Amino acid sequence: MDDDSRIDTLKAKLGDQLLLDELSDQLNRTRGLLRRSPDEVAALALERAGGHAEAELRIAASLAAGTTLAVPDRFPEAHRLCMRALEVLDREGSRDAGAPKLGPLKPLAEPAVEFVAEYIVSSYAEDVVNRLRTLYARRESQAAPGTPDRRELARARMDLERIAPGFGGGSPLTPVLAAGASVSALASAFQFLGALDFTNRRLLAVSAGILFVVFFLCAGILLRGAAVARRRATLIMQGPLAALWETIGHAGAPPRDSSEGFAMISVGLTALVWIVGPAVLAAFLLL
Image (cartoon, rainbow, N blue to C red; front, side, top):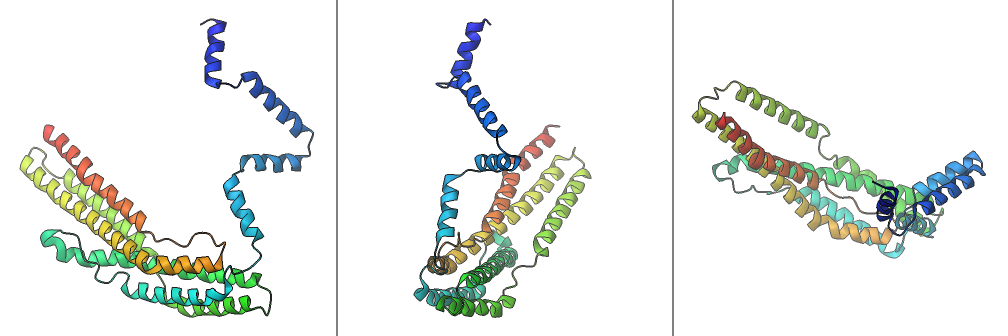
């Protein structure tokens, strides 16, 4: 390739900007940095690397907020509504969760679905209580002593201190135990498959069918439990939390439940059932 062709190729990659312009800009920035002190260089480099206009505007707005409560006269009402919603969520969040249409396996699946929904709902309620308790304490410390805002925030914080022990959430060992049980089940399944006589196609088909049913059942339970938890959490908590966040102001986004994570696990199991399982079975049958 001749020099003209190389230049044309480089121009096409750079578009309207010349390579000389880019190199000149880099040299000018380097000369400017060399004239500064090391502390100034570090600060400037961090500023250039971390600039995000939208996030910085949001931060500036939060810092500029002159009040600890955006709507002080409606905050007590919104707080009481949220406390009521937490009670209803704890009582009704996973009750009568039901089960997907699994035929004769439905009676076995119903308790498992309710367990998944209860874990997600309990963890979400605990997250809401802890987030509010922390937020109230921080806003209380910002309010001037003796002001109505400080008194209302202190009263609301004490409410949360009293009810927090009743919202312990799901056991932190539950995901670990579930993951351990899943790994153990997979290891047992592969060990079982390894002991099979792969020349017996009928036995192989029956074993693959059993594994298909097990994974299909687990995927359905996780997805149903997550869907029930998301629907109940949205129905009960979304409105009260949004109203409370509006009266507090500049508090970020309200807490969200963890149902999406369980749904992703369910999708992965479903893919394993419908894609990987048949592919492995077909490979064994072709041997």
